[in-house]
Image (cartoon, rainbow, N blue to C red; front, side):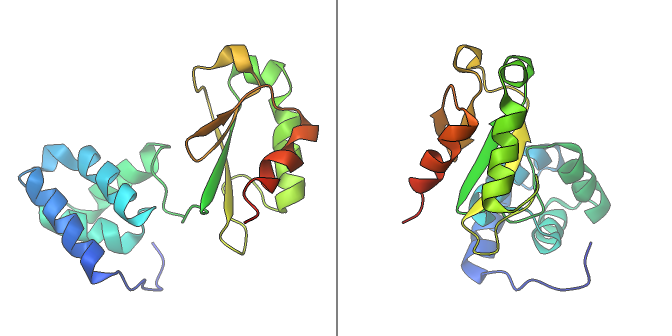
Length: 161
């Protein structure tokens, strides 16, 4: 955990405390609380983990262990338009790696990074259950199917507002 402290928005912290209370501050509800916390903050920095640990009366190390174990959780802020490229078998076989390379080239970021303007973050996921549309890209909740490297520019253009 970094030594630089992030100043959390007090309204969001209060909302997080309400979420913890809605789960009766039960330590067994840690994963559910983390999901809700990530919805509130967009990611799970150390400061958010500390609030959760305090509210649920569990060690910060336990919260950190759960956050780092599950790939759904992130300690890095995601971009306004998070991009996920499916690299499951069907997508991989149909060229997902080339699509991913094109996103990396156009955004000038690696997987797990966010563009300096905060617009886009890039990640991979294992299967979105749309194998018939392979290769598949998600931007936020929007699904793009049969994406080719040539289609990457068109997808990004939709978010250049």
